[in-house]
Length: 114
Length: 108
Image (cartoon, each protein chain N blue to C red):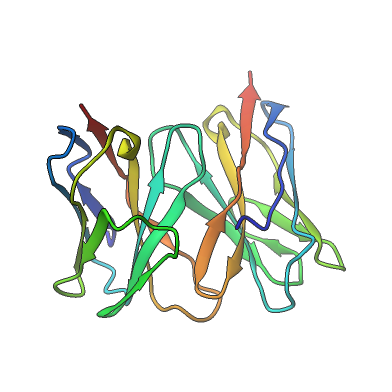
C-alpha cells in the first residue's frame, strides 16, 4: 500500500544535540509537510516543500531546518533541541498544492529531549 | 491562525449518531472545509471534505450551512473505535491550519 513512513517512531536526544527525523513516501506526491504537535495541542505547520521549493512558516524558529533530497524523502533537522521542542512531529504529503486535495499523514515521530 | 471553533469535548453512546459541530464564520468563498481525526498517538486520518454541498462517504456525512459559516460532521453509528480527537480545518491556500479539535468519547 502507498503510504507515508516516518522513522524512527520514537527519538530521544539530549538538550542541544542535533537530531534528524526522516519521512519517506511511496505516493509520489509533489508536496511534503512537517507539523509539530505538542501534548494536547493541534498540529502546527512548520514548513512544506513543493517539489524542491521550500516554504517556511513565518513563526517557525530558525532552529528547525528541512531537506528534501528527492521526491520520496524529506528530513527535519533540529539544530539545537531545547526542552520546549519535545513533541510529536508529523510528516504529511499531498499530490499538489492547489485544488481540494487531502493531505496524507504519517504516524509521527515522538521526540523526547533530556 | 485557526479559522475554526469547535467544542473541546463530546460524548456519544455507542450505536448512536455523533454530531460534531464546527464554526468557521470567516471562511472565504473558495476555501474548503476538511475533517480529520486523530486516534491517540497516531497521525491524523482524513475523513471528508466539502465546499458548499453536503457530502457523504463510507465514514461520515458533512453538512455545511447555506451561508458556509458552520458545518457538522455526522458519524451515523458511532463505535468505540471512533473515540478520537476530531479536527475541523479550513484549507487556506495550500495549507491546513488545524483548530483545537473536539475530543469525542464513545461510551459503551
